[in-house]
Length: 139
Image 1 (cartoon, rainbow, N blue to C red):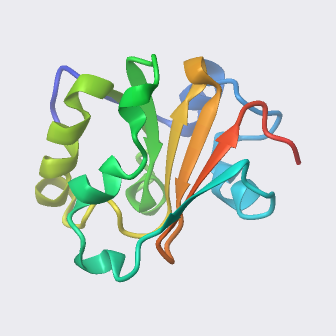
Image 2: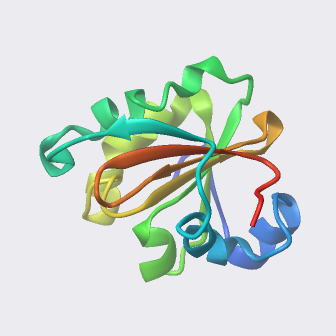
Image 3: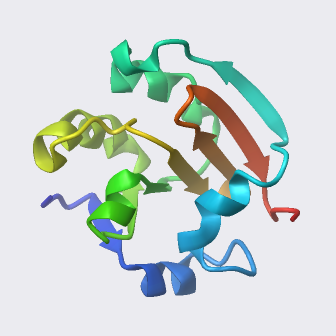
C-alpha cells in the first residue's frame, strides 16, 4: 500500500524502533492474551457486522498525544508484513482502504495498537472485547 503516511516495519526493524518490552514484538499478541489488561473497554457483540471505523472509535485514540500509531493485524503475520506505522491523522483513511488493499477487513481477528509515546497498548480481541494495557507490560 503506497502512502506518504504509511510505513511498514519488518519485525526486526520494529523491535529496534519500538522498544516497549523485553520480548520480540511478534510475540506481543500471545503475551497480551496471557496477562490481565489494565482496563476493559467493553465488548462489541456481532462485531463482524460493525464497520471498521465504528470499532476504531470505541478506542477513543484521539485523547492521546501520539502522532504515530503502530498496528499489528492478521496480515502482519499471514503475509509477514510486520507492523504498520501510521500517522494518526491518516488512520481512518488507511482503515477505509485496508479492505481494498489487503482483501479483508481491518478488524479481522486480533488487532493491536501501540502508542509508545503515551505508554499505551490496545487489543481488539477476536471475540469482540477491547482492552487497554499500560506500558511497561507486566508479565
